[in-house]
Every structure is written in C-alpha cells, then in structure tokens.
Image (tube, rainbow, N blue to C red):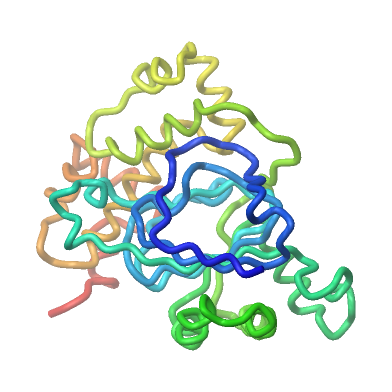
Length: 303
C-alpha cells in the first residue's frame, strides 16, 4: 500500500523511536508535507529517509550536525539516526501564513524495499556503500539535486512499483555523485528508545530563542536538571557542549544574512543573538575558518 500524506498536522518535539503502525510494515512510503515543523520531533526510526525541501527554511539537526536548510535541500538519513528539521519561528506566526509556504517530499524505505539481500549483490555495491555512509547523514549539492528534481516531484503520485524502480535509480545517482558531504562527525544511531522529552524541549527553546540571551541556567531549569547534570546529558545526546551547540545554531543563521548585502556585519551580530562583535567574529572564525567579512566577500549574492 502506498502512503500519501498531504497537509498532515504534526505534534511537537520529543526524541523517540518512530514505530507508527501505518508505516512500520511498509518497505517504502512516500509522503508530501505542507505544514511547518517538517518533523514532529527529534526522533529516529528503522527506515532510511530521503528528504527533499522544495519550499521553506530553518535549521536541521542530523546526528551531531547543525545546519540551515532552504529550498533545494536534499539529505539522506540512515536508520536509527536522530534528526529534526525545524522551521524558522516566523513559519508558526499565523499572520505570515500566506507568505511562509512549506513543501517537502519524504521517502522512507527499508534496506530490503526491493528484496531482502538486493544490496548484498556485487552490482549494487555503490548503493550499499551510500546506505552505510548514511549513518552519518549525507547532504547533496545543487548539481545532483537539480538533476533529480523532476523525479522527486513526481514520485509521490506514482504506483508503488514505479516508486521502487525510481528510488533505485535515485539511489544509484546519489551513490555515484561527488556532489555530497557527510553531516555528522560521529555515528549517533540509537539502538534502544530514549524515553525523554528533555532534549526535545531544549532544542525547541534554542531554535525559537537563539536571538536572545540564553544561559546554561535557563536551559537547565527548562530541563528540570542541575547545570552539571544537564551538561552531561546534553553532551551525551548531541555529542556537543551546550555552548558549542548554541554557537553553531547562531552561526548557521548568520550565514543566511551574510550572503546578502542588506545588513551590516554588526547588525547581523545582534540579530543572531551575540552582544559583542568581537565574540561574534571569534565564534564565526572558529566555526567557519574565516571572519564574517571574508565569508561575505567570497559568498555574497547580488550586485
């Protein structure tokens, strides 16, 4: 049975094992979502997931990776890898509903969506290696994404047999392209469910309030933990310290401003939550290897 979900309303954030009775026995499901907060929670599941964004923007979390996403974003996430696509806060403002559109195509599939040992055969070694690499999450560049755009746009309404054939073709092209990068630095696959909403609450808070002054005490209280306990918990769950994680969110947001010339570096500094231009420059160089001005010079869009 093909699963086609459009305009599906989703609940909010919790790290858990997705095991929905609607999809758990399916080898392949294709969904189209048109509502903010692409994922219902910081979660993982037994299927591989290929997610293609045609409309909307925000922050995505895959394993220990934090990055901005935008139209054209195409990412393959391995089975049991925690992940979350979180729209910008403006997408949840009812006043902006007409201007903030969301559209994504999500393909979830088991490794045996064709047959149990398909990818163990030598002729499919390239796809097997790609699926193995997806335990870190893999992001694909604009060249291969544009090549696959029409297929990804049409696959939702195809019969299941056609979906399976086209998914094989998509995976083979993705396996052969050099236009891709690994996302997570470490293998963070979950082998047992973590029944906690503490991280979920903190991630939502950071995503919605990164422009404000967020202290360790703030998030520790939010998680109902002492600062020391929270630091250990956060490090275990994300493979990063809270401060490092918050800085990454802010820097990734700053990148989107820097590629345009409407705002000065000083304005961007305060827009993304820093209260010191020196600290902003320091954290930016640590994260990106260049100063904000240098990054803007080489990446600015427009005249």
